[in-house]
Amino acid sequence: MRGGASRGSLGEVARYFLRLGCVAFGGPAAHIAIMRRELVDERRWLSDREFLDMLGVTNLIPGPNSTEMTMHLGYRRAGLAGLWAGGLLFLVPAVAIVTVLAWAYVRYGSTPAGEAVLLGAQPVVLAIILQAAWGLTGAAFRGLESFGIVAGVLVLALAGVSEVVLVLGAGVFTALLWWFIRLLARSSRRSLPELPRAGQHPWALPRPRRRRDDGQRGWLPFAPPLPVALSAAAGASGATTAGIFLGFLKIGAVLYGSGYVLVSFMRDEFVEGRGWLTERQLLDAIAAGQVTPGPLFSSAAFAGYVMDGLAGALAASAGIFLPSFLFLMAAAPLVPRLRSWQPGNAFLDGVNAAAWALIVFAGVTLAGEVLDGWFPAVLFAAALVLATWTRLNTAWLVLGGIACGLAWTGLA
Image (cartoon, rainbow, N blue to C red; front, side, top):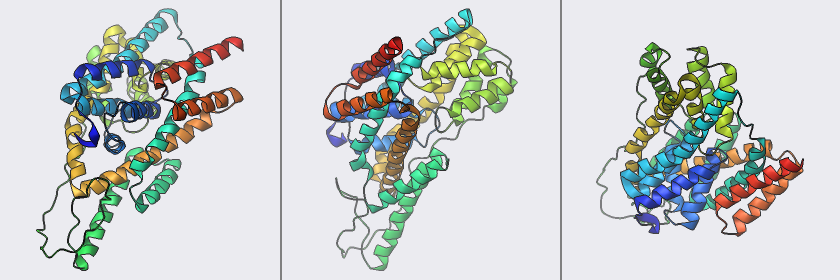
């Protein structure tokens, strides 16, 4: 295994991701930051560069990024069984909690607001995000071109350009730059760059050699599978469990970007398109996903329960997450092959720089929303110090923040 890591047991993967699913508040950037701190820094499952490789490829695949990272990391540690165990056990707590909230909502007409939970959790996860970004700088900046990519991605992200466009564009740019340098080397009668050694920049040119280049050409070993055509099948169904499953399967197969894009997809499919949900029910479903741990996509379970009870919750959850498992089964084995192929190596370096920039962008955006008073600012500063200078587990950091939020709300 690369990066000094070794294979682990399926039980190890299952225990870690089940625990993570119980405490992973704060959205995908926070989940990814927690995984990086615990699995790269503390447990040494993989290197920073391998982690960013996975994150970059994940940004090119439809579906919830943090959930797909659990599948990547599970596969890296325990193979195909680890992929399924990591993904499923990360989802189980969120789906279970949201389904219980949906039951209470249907029975009593309301759900807990969760302001105290968010007040305490959000400043802590913001600190974890920024600490993770700092730790990933060495893997993200591979050369001078990385600084240009980061600056460009930050500007374009601020302008509202899609994440997948930014990540794919950065990868293509660095791959083309690699080919351009290769052509310059040929024109000056230098040989092709050898496969970079560990720690060597992928574009570093060796000394000229007399042996003539064999002219081998590579092929791009990774391309995200095209989403299946599900619109007609989903639209033809009535208000049934099967219809809920197909509707969410279509959403899961084509949804890129932040989990908050889910609001628009669900409104189009189930509010305006079918009339199975009201606007208020949709907003309550999103709120339930926000105040519970795990991915925001667990809101699908809430909406499914409102539409068709427990069967609807299970059908919605299966539908929205199944495409991610299928995409990752195809993509995860190809990440190391992409890194070992010279143009793919350059492509991933560009993707990694863009992924790092998006983590920073998410942290800065969240800071503008969270740090709106002295209490969250103090909590953020304390969490940043603890995350940077201690080995305190992130689960305790998050739970401590929630406890502080609950205590502060009770005193106010």
